[in-house]
Image (cartoon, rainbow, N blue to C red; front, side, top):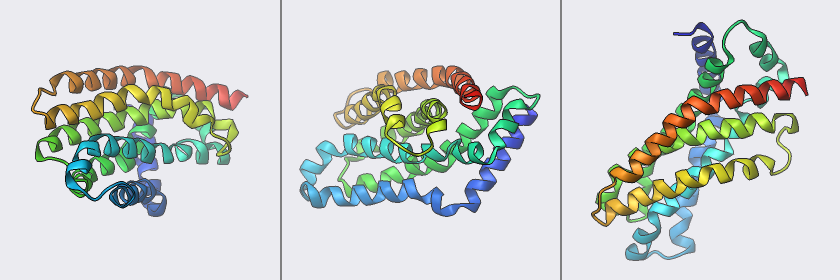
Length: 223
């Protein structure tokens, strides 16, 4: 295993554990919005079950987006990122380590929490396996693609809406196939197609996104 990967992975995971408040923000947002949906729309189980797949996926996407600002920003502000870039290690693996930690502390908890919140939205039983599988893969894609946007907007700090504008178009295929897989499962159809598509997107993102992110980080530092 690449030495730089392991060092960055352990460091970022330790930092995330120490900052438990920031760690909990996306999960709390996810939970609060799902709780408010029946109050704002309708408490009827039949109607909630119809919109549950889309609501759960949209909220998971937005919750993941909330945490993207901190992916590289703290390291950029204190100069750590510049030191990471000049290390004699492939930047690809160090960027990948940061993305994996981001998924572990955001995407994974959201995926595991989703079935509980699905019960609050009266999601039919048949939809739970597809929901968890699609979110596990889909949130990983969100972290990979979100890292590209976070790196491109790094010099801007936390100001403006440029980051969401960059990543939202990239997120749309994941959202569509993810919500569709859950809806197909509920309707009794095969979910192999959309889940295989999400898996293919994950494989492609895993190969391409860290390289693009590494290049964007170098440009941000030089700029």
